[in-house]
Each structure stands twice: as C-alpha cells, then as structure tokens.
Amino acid sequence: MDDLSRVDRDPNAAESGSVHEGDQPRSAAVLAGQLRRAFVAGELTAYFQPQYDLKTGRVVAVEALCRWQHPQDGLLLPGRFIDIAEQYGLIADLGRYMLEESGRQIADWNKRGVSMSVSINVSPSELTPEFAASVLGRLRELDLPRGAVTVEIIESPEILYSDEEFTTLNALIDGGVGVSIDDFGTGSTSLELVRRLPLTEVKIDKSLVQDGSAEVDALVRECLAIARDRGAHVVAEGIETREHFDRAVGWGCDRAQGYFFSPPLPVAEVEPLLSESAA
Ligand code: C2E
Ligand code: CA
Ligand code: CA
Image (cartoon, rainbow, N blue to C red; front, top):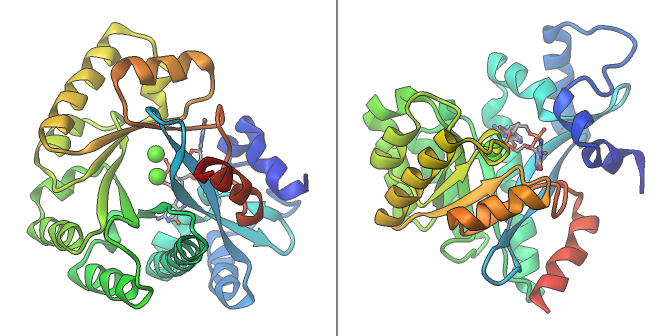
C-alpha cells in the first residue's frame, strides 16, 4: 500500500484535515493559485468509496471524493481546499472535473460489464439551470443510462426558499440524475428538506449512525418513513463498526458506506471490490 491510500485508511487522519500540512503555512490566496494550476497539471484525482446494498451485500454505487496530489504537501483531503475553491471561484471547475472523471469511469465500467452508479458531491452554489443542462448534456454524450449518476447536496436551509434550485433539482431528476440530501441530521431543517425537496435519496450522516440515543433513533425513523413515502432510498454513511452496521440494518436503510467496508480508494484499488461484487 502506498502513502496515498494510507491517508484514507487512517480514519483519524482522514478526518483531521491536518495531514500533510507541509512545513510552511500557506495563505488561502497562495493555495488558490496552486489549485488553479493543479487542474492543468493533473494533480487532482477522484477516489471512490463503495456503497453496499444491505439486502444483497453487493456494491451498487460509489461516491466520488476529490483528492489533490500537492507537489510539496502530498495528498490533500477536500477539507483543505473545498472552502478555498468556493471562495476563489474555482468550485464550478472542480465540479466539472469530478463529473468528467466520474462519468468516464462509470462509462468504462459499464462497458466492461460492471454495472455501477456514481455519486458526486455538489455545492449548493453550483445548483443552477446551466449546471443541470451541462450535467445532462455530458451524460448523454457519454451514453450513460438513467440512474448512473447521483448528485449529493449538503443541507442548506436556503434551498427550501429558492425556486431556481427547485427547478434545477427537478430538471436533474427528470433527466435521470439522482438527487441525494447529504449529511442528513446535521442541520436544523433536515426533516423539512426531506419532506419538500425534489430528491431520490437521503444520506444519514455519520454523527447519527454513531450515536445510540433514543432521540436520534426517533429522528432517523421519521426520516425513513418520509423517504419511503416519497420513493427515495436511504443510505447510512460513516459505518465504522459492527454496531453501526447493525444499527443501519435495524433502521431499515437500503445501503451503507464507511470504513467498516472500505475507505475511499483510487480506481485501481476499488476495482477488485466492484468485480467481486458483480461476480
Ligand atoms: P461527504 O460528502 O460527507 O463525504 C464523506 C466523508 O467521510 C469523506 O471525507 C470520506 O472519506 C469520509 N468517510 C467515509 N467513510 C467514513 C467512515 O466510516 N468514518 C468517517 N469518520 N469518515 C468516513 P473526505 O473525502 O475528506 O471529504 C470531506 C467532504 O468534502 C465531503 O464530505 C464533501 O462534502 C466534500 N467533498 C469531497 N469531494 C468533493 C467534490 O468533489 N466536490 C465538492 N463540492 N465537495 C467535495
Ligand atoms: Ca457526500
Ligand atoms: Ca456525507
């Protein structure tokens, strides 16, 4: 195993955001300049984390997570550069890059008989009608089937009040792209979002999966009931232990994702897990 994957395999390192900080503190402006060049230099890459169907035990989807192979600092996790990308107007470039990488990867797997779908993370600021049109256009060019791509959006209360975002989400769903509410349970409007937002999936945040309280249990069960009513499936994320796994099964979640199964991995390392699953 190389140094790159080891960062992801250590849950504490993966979450701390302080790995490979480098010796020199770097200003946000400098890092933004380096990020701009990183697209051209080919330093960005997509890692993929499998999602397991809890009924069949098979990998049915992967979540694409961005990594930056920084020339001085080594492998950087998104915690180091997503906010900077937002601040310096680079988030749309990052989104296009991840769509391209993930779309082509899924098309390649499908061609090789591995039927798989991919989830990509999208910032609320990217949710414009132009974004929906460009995603749908690129998926058509790649000849991907309906359901091959899902966009994950994090909870942000403003979405509830924005016609443009509703229109965008509906356009994506009509065009065969899944819409997932990421990090369910971390905000104050979680249930309201699940009730009202155009969606096909809800992802229960790891903080809920890892909390055994009766209060969380009631919240997740209510979320599941609404999701079922709306025909959306439910993914539990951050499954690290057998106990978390059992909790996700007990709730009746459809899919699960987490270090218990596999960390996010580069293409070459995730492929064996997918073919095992397709066999
Ligand atoms: P997220 O979308 O909630 O992604 C899940 C994060 O949890 C990932 O961190 C993943 O490595 C980590 N994780 C997976 N399994 C486990 C587990 O069992 N336990 C724990 N504690 N953590 C687990 P990562 O890759 O560092 O990404 C952090 C966040 O950065 C993501 O959170 C997402 O919001 C954002 N992000 C990642 N890639 C992109 C991207 O391409 N575009 C945008 N806009 N955001 C991205
Ligand atoms: Ca996500
Ligand atoms: Ca999440």
